[in-house]
Image (spheres, helix red, strand yellow):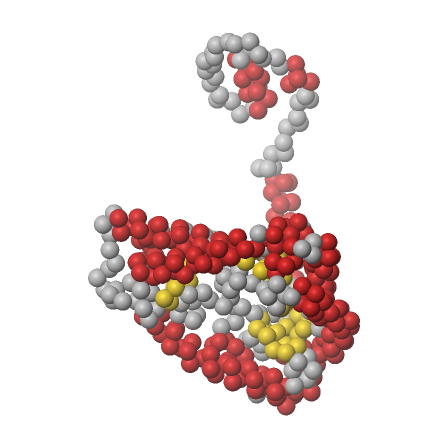
Length: 391
């Protein structure tokens, strides 16, 4: 393009007609309006103030509200108000589904055994929440990958392999493979797994540094925290340490009401998008992106709450374990699990209420897998899901 000079163009836009406004801009800039002239002019829009329109709109609104009301009544009638009736209706179906997946589960175990025996892998496991068919497919892909790249598989000797929601080395040193990733992503990790391990060595150093600037608070991880790689976790710790260091560098301090030592308290550092909260177990949960001033103020204001919740949890976890074992034994369950969001306190209430109905539920629940969550459902693998606060 030949060089030229910019020309300042001032245009007063005070009309409400889009076509005329565009034409005005084009003319002011000495640009052609031929294309604009070819576009047919639009017909005037309906005047919504027209009485007929208002009448039609009012009828539409009334019809919509009536339909919504009817739908709500239908849903209320369909609502499950009795766990005994629901279990009686669905326990047989659940058993049938469980038995129908026997061949798939057997294949899954065979594939796991093959990987362990052939490549010296310590254990192959998978996260909960995945359909057994997805697990089988992922294991078949891993076996195929291992056959084609047997030399690289020596890097996994003695390691625990987990199929989950990310690809990387976990905080426990397990090698995670994301089920939905392509095989090249898996191979890339397997080749450089020793490099990923280097982050595991750095984690204790970062945790110690963070603890020291937060009055020796205990840096820990909660059981159901979002899955992250060791490398990502190091970045999260580094980010929070930097933020708190800057906070102190500006002359700020802990509130005078906060004890000199916080060693009896616990804090969990999670990804940037996490909440700032006290967990049901009494741990402080903070996102790594939390401003230092906000975090320190929050800790100071919620120490009593954390103490109370920690005390309750230390009692409840033992009660929960005892009730868990009693429910499994009393009902003859194959397995009993709970959703991550079900706290020990909620699980205790659920187990106690189940046991009061053992005379009516025992035979139907026997030989089933029970999953405590927030809804009723029968999963494709034959798992019975019930809400913890069932009626």
